[in-house]
Image (cartoon, rainbow, N blue to C red):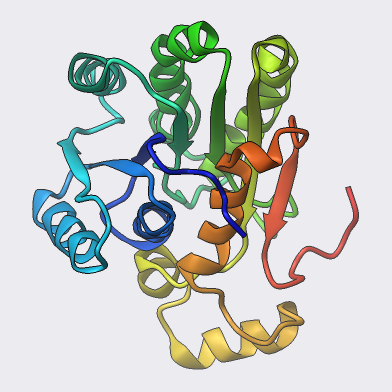
Length: 252
């Protein structure tokens, strides 16, 4: 299927590794011009080299800390100055943050800032360009809401779901869709090194929780993102779509 992404300009945050890196590679493979944002320049350069080796348009790189107050605005300015427009925005930057019921306010505030406000602050200055062009795609990578315990990131992800739904209602008439993709366990630094570092525990978790029988790969999620970013997906708007191998137990 031709996703009609040639010449589309796509910005992907948190793209030095894992899900973000997978999204950049799939979009580039479909002919899109990709802009990768992350803090680690060495990993971004590796990504750009890999994209070029695929025979795709070399990825443009922006090093920025989106958790800083000025980071999202800096990224938006650089994109506008260099490209003059943006077609597709993938807000992927975020991080799981373990919390207790009595964790300090600073932990909750810092996590909420990264997992909600950073995406909002980056999206806001780019919306006028999409409105002017009467076309755009905003896709937020969030998380599941069937939590097994407290995690400070979940509050930011939940806020992103509601914000995205409201935004989809506001921007739909301008040809802009806003959707969320909620990953389950996707092989990445965060999953393999922080949440499930023990192979034995990992195997037990998979057997107990994931009907498909394995953790997904970044590309398993990236192909959905590429479809949602396509003009073909024009009537999918305001949705939260899970990519989790059947891990979620309840219909929503």
